Image (cartoon, rainbow, N blue to C red):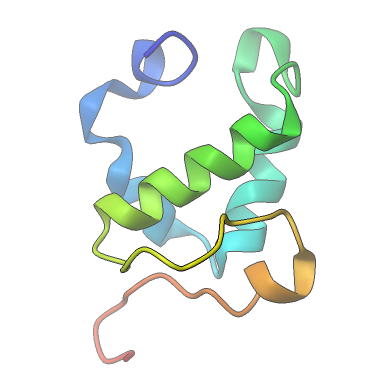
Length: 84
């Protein structure tokens, strides 16, 4: 609420689909957000934001907590027309 919805509102879930993969989204958010104090949140908060947006976009929950591991995040692709 404090760091995201103030600028993005409650419809920010669609933002995840603008990135090639979860790593790109995480990388941008962790170095550029919040705009007034970029990168100020703990890194775990940024990965939690990505996980939240994935869940709200219809991704199933996993058995383990999402971690900021590049190789793993690069394999997570947002749903796009024609992509399964």
